Image (cartoon, rainbow, N blue to C red; front, side, top):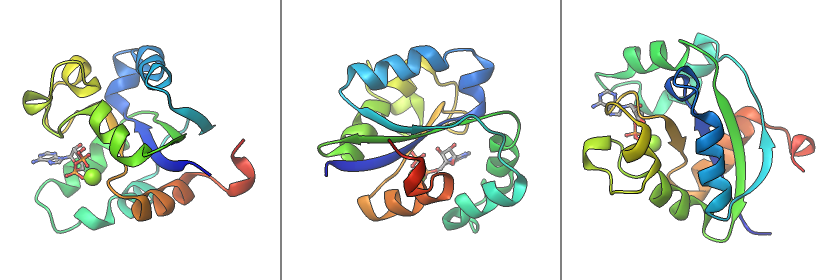
Amino acid sequence: MKERTLAILKPDCLEKRVQGKVIQHIIDAGFGIKGMRLLSLSEDSAKKFYAVHKERPFYVELVAYMTSGPVIPLCLEKDNAVADFRKLIGATNPANAEEGTIRKMYADSIERNIVHGSDSPENAKNEISHFFKDSDLV
Ligand code: ADP
Ligand code: MG
């Protein structure tokens, strides 16, 4: 099996109505979509998802942002999916993101940065299971 990673199109992506464009970039970069959902995160679920950041000063705001509108979690598959997806989305702060990356093209700020990507294969497994059962994946 190829490697898998979790992406989330964040509330600002849907607010800006660019979710179709971002999904096209993901497809064009060679990722297979194994699972896709449209949902609103509860506060509980957002807190759990970002628990690694709970001591960070931006945690409360991050949870508020991630629950401010619907999101689209995607389970993506490709060789080297985790690292390649991080490369496709660019740096956390769009001001530092390389030209051609999704965050450079669409994001406004270090917080409202359009898209999430898992940072390691191990975290990807946990994050995928936050949103998808194995039987949900094609
Ligand atoms: P990444 O999403 O690139 O892996 P992190 O895991 O460090 O970045 O942070 C998780 C999310 O928290 C970021 O994508 C962003 O939405 C938000 N965030 C990160 N750093 C800051 C910050 N300094 N101020 C506000 N929000 C931040
Ligand atoms: Mg991260």
